[in-house]
Each structure stands twice: as structure tokens, then as C-alpha cells.
Image (cartoon, rainbow, N blue to C red):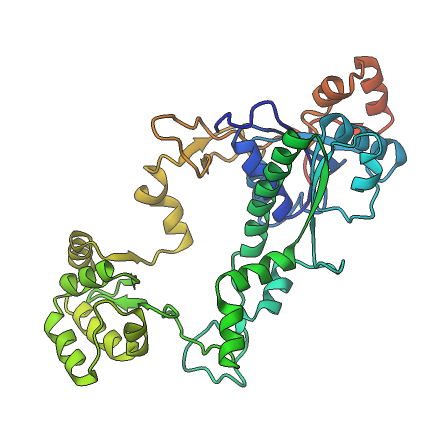
Length: 413
């Protein structure tokens, strides 16, 4: 936690991944992010995987450091409270449809400097999720073993909802860009960020779209090889699998030195008539012959020895871990200053959680704050932002329009 965004309030009305991620990143930089949900929890409140008590670990981690308000958003009064919260706050992140009761146009009539960021599916209004958007990009048909037949092989979906997380990060950036414009002009704005456009735009930014059009065909599957450069997984004598990447001349020299294959590489250069020292293209084009030399060398040593030599030579490599191993690894997590053990999580489970990914040298980020219990800050927020009295809030609670913390109650299973 840093306080770079101290004093900035944001209302977040979210579900699933992209929209909560945008709010999370703002909260980690010190913004007061108030997530508003339907009483009992929104669409993502019980998302798998859950603890034995029914607490979603996904929801818990995407909503760290936020405040939680629970309203009856199916009814007119609950919606009116939410609209007024947005008007009083002036900043909104949401993935509700543009034509919903939370439309920018309607709210901005009484708050013309409103800044809202709205995450959509596709630019034409169609629904989308990360995994359906990914199917449209072509990436799943580039993924898989090189020996698979291009005409009959199935697609390989990615496990991580990468487009969701990229969209969330982009939305946090877009919000701050809009706030800068408002500081300069006093004008509000609505920014709409379609998930599909983020995916296809990233596909284009990487050069892949231009590549496909230029070549007039699809890219072949390469297994674990890196496209356009020298890199792949190798196996040591004792069966440890590790990944190597040599995208620069320095990385290439380090790899050759560590594996002791300079003479073999020189002989291959003589046979092929090309140099591998400074050419990504040559290394990629002749990758299979190079892979054979590198794997043969890796097979002669145990991983501990290889790791020592690779590190000393400045090569770029990393061994493969299971996700469970990664979560318990000292270098990656338990001794990494990014993480700190969090307690007080709604799940009751204590585990490491990340601070802000961006670190200020010499300035500790502070411990990660836990996620709220659903509705934990309903009374506080309604009093502070709308000026409602205790009696007025109590009446709203009694009528089922507002709910307070669900601590101690059993979530949906």
C-alpha cells in the first residue's frame, strides 16, 4: 500500500475479474475504493474456489484494501442510493451495461464532471468473457505441440484469464488519464473499454496481426519454443525441467558459456554458413539443430550444477514449478518483499498477499490490507458520503435496502 492516490474516492460496481482488478490497483495506491454489491453478494461473490465455509478466495483477493457496501440493487431505492453515491464521489468503475440505471449520461446530468470507466464485452455491445475473447484472437490455435496436425489439432486455451487482467490494468490507467484531463479542463468523461478490443488491440500491438496479413497464413505451433527467438524447455540429467530464453547477444553468450558448447555451435555455424551471435532470426531459423546441442549438454549435468553455471554466466533461465511449489517458494514468495502474511481475511485463512507491484525504493509499501466482509462499510459510507443519520440508515437496514457485514454468517455454497 502506498498513498499516491490518497484523497481519491472511487465507486466500483463490479463482477468477475477485469473491473475488480482496476479497483484493486487503485486501492493499492491509496485510493478509497468502495465496492457496491447486491445484498447477499453479486455474480462473483461465491466464485470457485471456496473454502469449506463458502468464502471465495478469488473474490477475497480481487477486493483487497477496498470498502464494501451492500444494497438492494434490484429495487428502486437501492439503485437511487447507488446513483447518489456515484454523484457525490465523482468517479466510477463498472462493468454494468451502458444502458443500465448506472448510465454515465443519466448520472452526469447532475454531476457533469463525472469520470466513469465502463468495461464492456465487444465494441458492438455483445457479451464477452476472457475465455470467449481469447478464442477469437487465434492464440489457442498457435498453442500446443509442434507435431500436432494444423488441420485437425484442437485449440489449447490459456489457464490465466490474461485479457481480464490486462483490461483491468488498462482501465486503472484510463481512469487516471481522465482525471488528469478533468484537472486541466474541469470536464467529465465516460471511457468505454471493451474486453475484446483490449485483446485484439494487444494482438495488433505485438505485431502478430501485421505478421499474419504479411505472411498470408497462420503461424505454426511451436510447443514450448519461443516464437522468433531462441528459447525452449530443457531437461537436466536428474530430470529437472527448466526454461531458457536467449533473446539478446548477452543472453546467448551466457547460455553457450554455461553449457560449454562453444565448439559445437561454431561447427554448426560453419555447416550452415550463418552466425548465431547477434541474429535472433538465425537462432530461430536453426532452432531445432541448436536445441539438440543444448539438450545434449543439459543431459550431462544435474540441475543444481547447471543452475550455478547459468547464473554465473548471466544466462536467463528458470526451472518449472507446480503452482503449489511456487506459492511456497522462498525466493518467489516467502522471502520476496512484495508479499506479506495477511490475517483477518474473510475466509479466516492466513496466507501471503501482494503489496503494490510498483515499489518506491527506500519506502516500504506497508502490509496488504484484507478484503472486506460484504457490507462491512455500508453504514460508514452512507453516513460519510451521503450524510445519512444513524436513524435513517437503521430504517434502510430494517427495510432490507441496506445490509451490513456478513461476518459470522455463512455465504452461499
